[in-house]
Length: 68
Image (cartoon, rainbow, N blue to C red):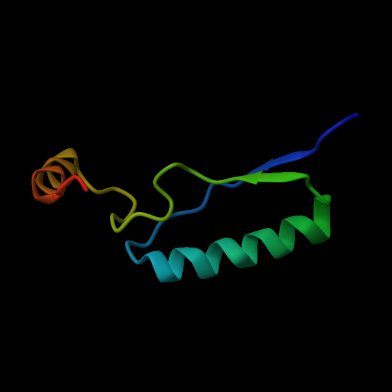
């Protein structure tokens, strides 16, 4: 059995809702073009940090995050 994977490299905008809308468009296009079995997005794609955010912003956020 063969599987087809599509790797998506999309810019994150810093707004998860906008990122999700862009992902939905990308999925629809990939299904039409390639009929993949799985589509893979960058690990930080749905984050609140836009592309190009410096490491200091990540450190600041980590300090504010409270484990559940």
